[in-house]
Length: 87
Image 1 (cartoon, helix red, strand yellow):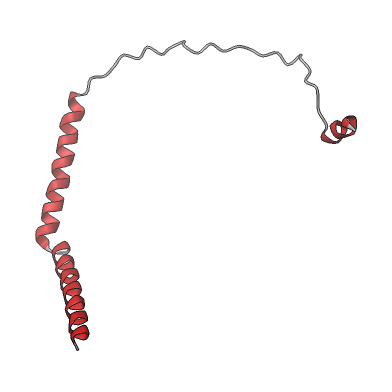
Image 2: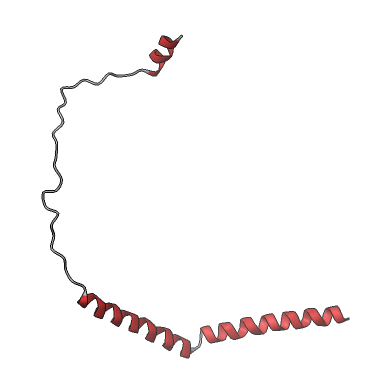
């Protein structure tokens, strides 16, 4: 009998906690607060973005391109011929 009462209270506490969490999450007060915090974050980002300095671009002509000639012939390897030579 005590075991059943204990399980009943556990289930009751768990269901009540889930109910109150869901109720608060979907309440108008929580929606307003979350919207306000998001709008405040956007305003802070815009203010911070205005203060960021723009740096001068000094990366022009850093990469030197080397032309490779196609006149060098590469030796083609054949897998089966390599096995035959090792035997």
